[in-house]
Length: 336
Image (cartoon, rainbow, N blue to C red; front, side, top):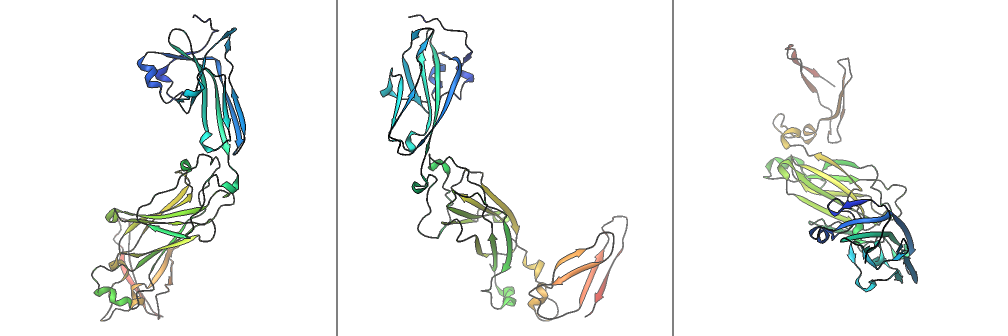
């Protein structure tokens, strides 16, 4: 049968890879795809549990009735061969997807008649984007992230966490800090991680907090899944060695693979923070000062005593010029 069709846009299948997932078969047969004028795409939103819905497809072109076939997400629905309608009964997340009705025309062509994008809206009670586990905290060395792809009805924006704050400190488990000098491979460091909950986080049900080693710590990693949106917005990784570097990531759950924030942090080497002075190791000398700042356009230097600084001491400032043409250097003692 020869069908006379109106003027249409012709496109070879090789540049229509977005039309269907099984177009390779059409390419091998040198078939062509065209549309009945401009393809009409209709978006249909159904609440989960809707009893009956019918997708109607026009099958007449210039008064000629065509035999229609249907595809869902690029796969032919064989039981709907030559049906003008595609029924959806008792809507659930399995019905979510892209439906295409098409007909086989003359000269080995496929005519796209209409497309439907069906979105199934689950009720919040049914948790369209998943639910948190029973345990508040789940620890794991293998970081498997629950994603929105696991929940076909999750059509909602899952925002990333708010501002990420990292801090480092020597664990309180290290009772006598001077004994760190006698340990072979001490791991006294801990990293405290904290983040905020954004205001539009309706569908978030938890967080994944992970660390990955960088530089000389590549391969060292771990993570924890927090099964609550608001009960726990901080975590501490401990037992970390001197001189290591990590990437810390906090991921909102479920993940869309983009809704996370991360920062890197470097733990000081022991030689950088604990230099012996005199005959004994006083831990307050290991961490004498912090927040050293120099005012611009002046020689004023300011600092604060760290929380490890138990007693007052004299300080000695060493200075040298960063200008290669200037050899000015020296030291100055400050007494209290």
